[in-house]
Image (cartoon, rainbow, N blue to C red; front, side, top):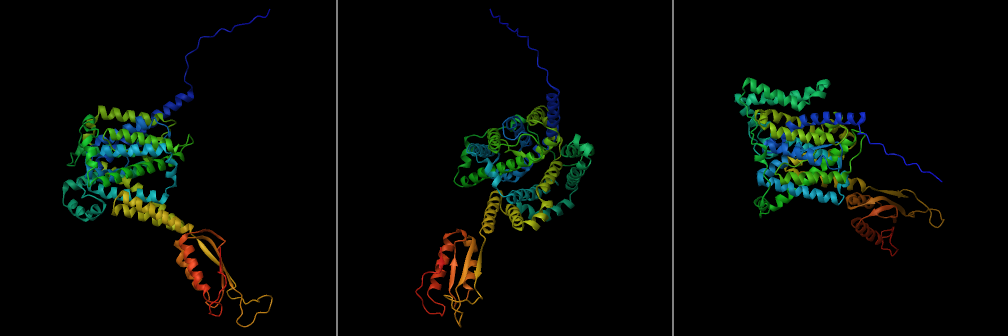
Length: 525
């Protein structure tokens, strides 16, 4: 008889976290505090510069941490209100009002969700880098021009050209006002500290520059009792106002519909492009899981949908906070979720702390952030190696300053497409027998008898190169027969085919001696 031994099941011991798990949690906890300290002044500053209550910037940061931070996509990049959308948000608030901002952000978030569901996220990587850099440079210039007024507690006239045109008057008014000079000293001191603090690397690892600069400026203003403007505090629950039917109706009015649709499209496209380009940059900073662009686009769309429902600012992934998260040693998405928790605790428990922050200090933070958006260091090598890309970058930036965000980016995209079409439509002619006399049917060459000129076209023949192509063909001798071979072309568009056919008809009507001839066409298909 065979006996079977039944193994007794030992009671399970409670699982003990491994050292690796504890070290990961410790790293994420520390990184979340660093990101929180970086996010607070940026959230508040972007909100104030956008013309909305400061608390709405914190609401967007909270949603970016608690919701977008939990969703799949990119594991380490951090989302929140960004300086890149400040100009566009300000224009939308001035045109449609603060109440309608939530409706615009909600529609942009739904559009992002649709693009993510259609798997369009990866296509954003096809956008010309020159256009993106030009977009950021244009935003930086407009942001700086507007925040120079806030540096001296003055109100900006409005759009980019008006702000730039008013700078001489601003300088004259500031020189004659003690209060304006006090605010300027606070803002300029903030910028100087933002530039110098990162050079002290040991201290910068513990306390981020924006927090130190704003905190020190606040202390100086409080101790010296300087006559400078401070942030107005309304309370977190008071500023959260979901959009209602009247707000959507305002967007659909006869004169506002086109502008509203353009704003929604600009919100969605610019926020998506900035987020996905930020994800690509963050992926190069760490060795962890890389970004799924379609999932990240849907995560950003979900975040903007909720921000719209709360009437808050639009969000993007922000490279400043994301890089701070990586450099602080974050290992998982827990760090960005925890940073949202700290923002929520701060906004709920210490809202009055914002009321002592001078506006000039926040303006200094945004002037510094706007300066970092301008690719000064990359301009010279780009001009040397890729002059066409440099032209697209500069044209995009100037167009944004001169018009608005949407039209400037659209112009940049059109220029990038035109540049690519010009570069790819390269065609050249190989000409054989132009100066070479030869025999016909084996007979020696005699006076006035020369063999046909053979012309072979190579490359891509498009309408962009058609003038040069016709100039070369028409420069051939009129008294010589020409055989044009088009078999070497990879592409021949309709305009070139029609023009070459017309040129061939003109050549067909005359022989080598200038008289009419009845031979077959000289253009080889």
